[in-house]
Length: 146
Image (cartoon, rainbow, N blue to C red; front, top):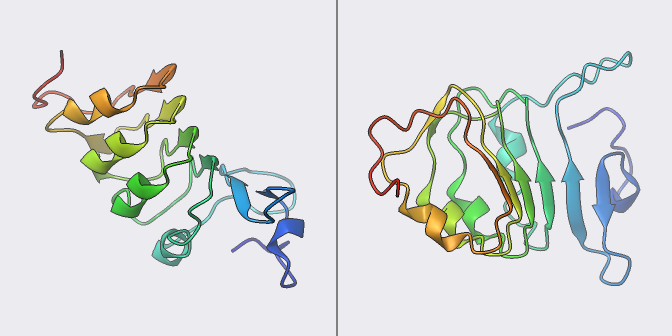
């Protein structure tokens, strides 16, 4: 994934944080960067599938990455502990309704021209939400926008 990710202990990897008690990965800070070291962004679908088993995530930032036109994976809706989710400018297609299962979510950023929603009823499940950014998301055909 990142050139700095070496060794078996992912808790020591750059942009990865683990809970001090459980040792489980609880935060991934993988916002695309254009630093002087050349790690600009993550590419490809294999990055997405490797996230599937990280059930203890509280913070996930994949913004600005190139996932080759992939849709937001349905399994993200099963990350029940997630409080921060930023997928802006990373995915395309329809916003999966399972995002509405994330009742602990405080911040949700899906800002991009490549996403759309046909039904906004999933927002009602986000009972802890304080910040929502759907800038540029196509809501022109969305039902249940009230």
